[in-house]
Image 1 (cartoon, helix red, strand yellow):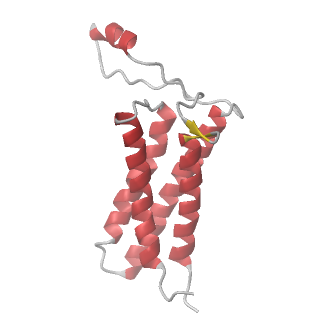
Image 2 (cartoon, one colour):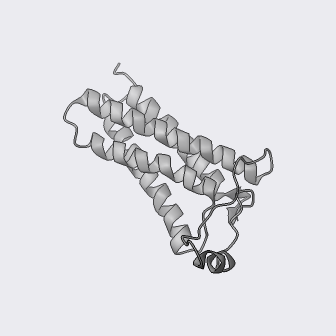
Image 3 (cartoon, rainbow, N blue to C red):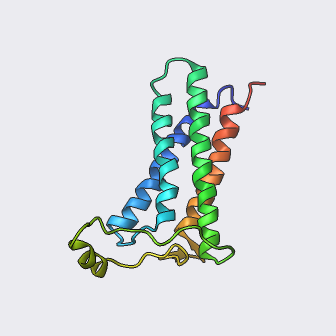
Length: 159
């Protein structure tokens, strides 16, 4: 067992959500996939995890670093759990709790024209899959595995 696994946990807590958010944004802006409301829900905990993990690099005390890494791990875990829920909605294992996403960004008289121009983004239909796994499913897998690794590494004691 390594004497100190906190630095590795800290790097995973920073790089994992950065990579997942970069992939989500690339699929949106480069790949043309419009996120539904639940896709956005999965991103918010990653944004929090990125901020917490980045702070862990500037906090001077080890206990502060560990606390921030653990909180980042919990945020990543939360994103993974939302991903499980979203994937379950996509596979029709259970009902979703929300209407489709609003990507309009318009108001007043332009609202009707904006509605006509916008694609319908349904939370229960995956826009992209690989080997039968949607983006929500991949987020769930990577986030849950990564969160457990972070939490395990950050809480492991020296022997």
